[in-house]
Length: 88
Image 1 (cartoon, rainbow, N blue to C red):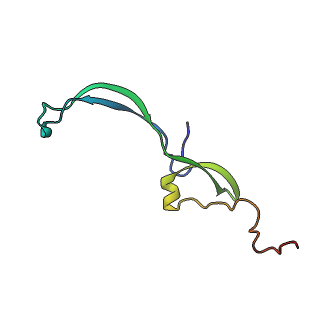
Image 2 (image 1 turned 135 degrees about the vertical axis):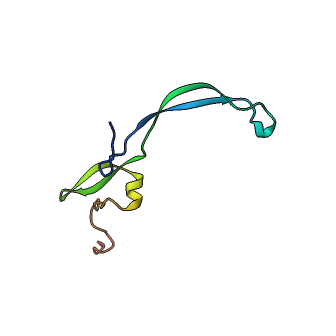
């Protein structure tokens, strides 16, 4: 199961309700539930390169943890090229 390595958030089971009819507020007899289909609510997980146990690793982290700053991202790629002299 896909799970956030920081908070443990994962997908959960739920239902999708199909309704029909006009709402009472709009002059109808009310909305009725016709069908309940099973579905899964997926956590918004992103693959991020983070520092984990002293080494950079690519792991799944939920966007809530990324926004809250609970992960320390690892620098990816080569050093910035603007600091190195350009070949002539």
